[in-house]
Image (tube, rainbow, N blue to C red; front, side):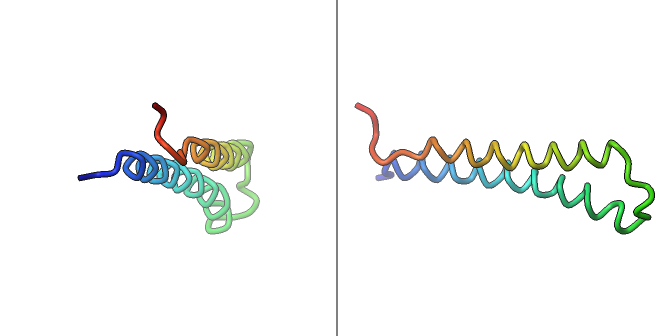
Length: 73
């Protein structure tokens, strides 16, 4: 029999990890793309990609707040 608390916590951790991976991918895209092409190609869109990645990474930390120690009655 599955423990509902463990199942809930694992789903929360998986979702937070998924959002964090997307955010870190966006940050990597914002940094690596100009590094591979040319640093003079850095534009405002690069800043937006990095800011979006940081925002998603922050959201993943917020999602982890939903980990429970006990099931509500």
